[in-house]
Length: 244
Image 1 (cartoon, rainbow, N blue to C red):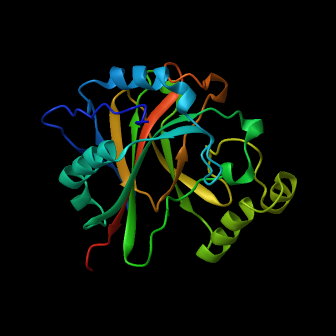
Image 2: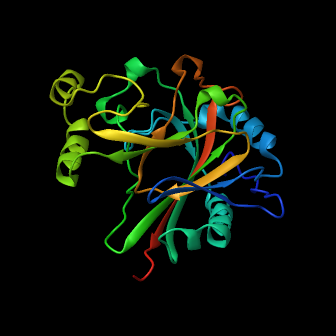
């Protein structure tokens, strides 16, 4: 049986990249009006909503649908042509794409979902990870993508991240002071440095090793229906780092 979504990504011609510098060393590359038929993608996702699954191996607070290699290759071509030279990346070694829906209420989240994260994937020394988000929803109140600086030494931050996946919620709150819910504000551990506003058919690329998370200002508006929820198409690209 074939994949439920096989339609190719059709990009608009003459795409323009806008680079936003959120803070020193944190840049986000933005391409608006990227797909020629974005609403067909929303319709396809809605048609195949039963194929979306919750995957326990990652901390994504919702459901997702892995996309086939052909679609991944098309997004990688866009990345190679327009973005790769702007990031710490040479040849792309691996790529992965998915459709995703944030669906979870704050009370459903586990501690590792209360904090921001980095997209390390399986990156090894000498490799970097780039990430992308294509916003496929009309309502900007569903939220964009927020970026952070870590405020503590790397060893302490690494312990926090480790414990977020090991401790019970009450123990994590007692030890680190985080309350259940989506992270939006600065605190003792992370400082928010900027947020990319969502826009329908906007594609953003960024260094996945920067701390970030979905910005969810109104979790009560989240929906498991792709036609009305926070539907995104996400890409991840593991690359060799540029020679220093």
